[in-house]
Image (spheres, rainbow, N blue to C red):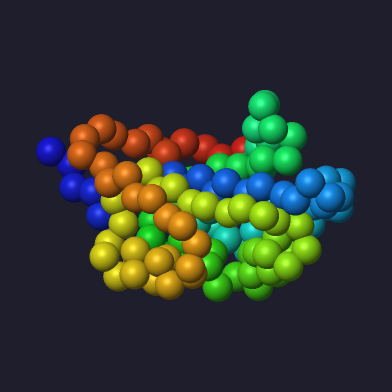
Length: 139
């Protein structure tokens, strides 16, 4: 049986909803800046996309795959991410929640919980990942 802990890849979904009067194009521009900066500064971020909900054009989801807990902890302190979260909170957003699919160490969960965002953890019980074996390509 495989061990799942802070050294294994995991998936994070960050659901972001913007206010009815928020400028969607301006929000996408802010997300684009954050995405580019994360791509350039976070080698532990293996997958990073910003997806729109098919039923609500004001709901977006960051779909992220991390190499390990260390990559997430770096992401949380990365200035481009902090800027985007601040813009979301102060200018655009009326909702933000996080889901983690994979097992994080207790200390990592504690640090993530300190962000104040609603977070739901789905710890891994079985399965496998080939994420670290895949060759990453930029779209």
